[in-house]
Amino acid sequence: MGRSTPLASARILTLAAGLLVPGLAAAADLLPPPPLPLPPPPPAADFAGGWYLRGDVGVGVLDLRRTVAVDVSHPPLPYKYAVHQDRVGDQVFAGVGVGYQVNPWLRFDATGEYRTKTEWNFLAEDKTGGNTGGYNLTKGQFASVVGLVNGYVEFPTKFGLIPFIGAGVGFAHHMFGSVIDTGYGAYAGGIGGGPAKDKTNFAWAAHAGLGYAVTPNLRLELAYRYLNMGDAETGMVSCLPGCPTKTVYKVRELDAHDIKLGMRWLFGAPVVAAYEPPPLMPAPLIRKY
View 1: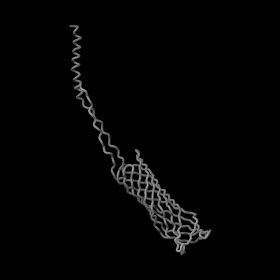
View 2: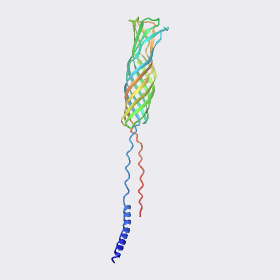
View 3: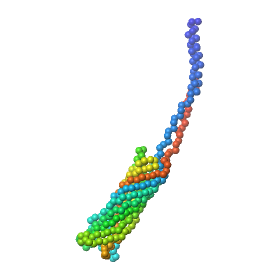
View 4: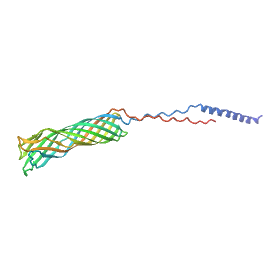
């Protein structure tokens, strides 16, 4: 009897293990599957698409290629001259516009602006009869209205900064006020004048700047613009009380180097990519023994 005790104990343990293993496997079958991962948040808005309004203010440093004095006398009178001064002042401007944001990289707008009066001065020495020693200083002021249709390519960054470049075409309407002509040197005491005159030209522009997305619907912009405004022209200038000489002054190739600060308000809601939930994970494979 004493020798059979270890064998009996081994049999009992083997039998207990056989009964326990199926129970553990069954218990494992009852465990719930692991939880599914939480869905990611929807992606951030790329831009507020659709229509927008804009407003701009700035200052333009004006330049001109040259002023040409054109004789319009009847009959024509030869007029030879040497230019000693030919310059134009700067302009301050303000404008508004409406545009459309096609996608985060492309937009178009139409703008209109008023440019304040600037001074024009033209000093020439009369060389018609040789070195006469007679000078004429012609002075006037003109303001401008500019309308452009523009297109821009933008380069959005994750920091809210939006560099951009662009170009535009349109018109420039110059409103020259009355002109005064004063004689100096051998012509001292002489005076003349001319009426106001308007002139409209083809205009074009090139833009480069940096925008900042304050909110999904609000943009601030700081930009440089080269603006070619064509020609401005005076009315017919003649000396007083009366003389046969009649002259029109044509201010050629007015260029503006503009620095402007702008704001754009986008009406569209932020465009968000459609959310796609992640695929369901298959239940873990559990082997049964």
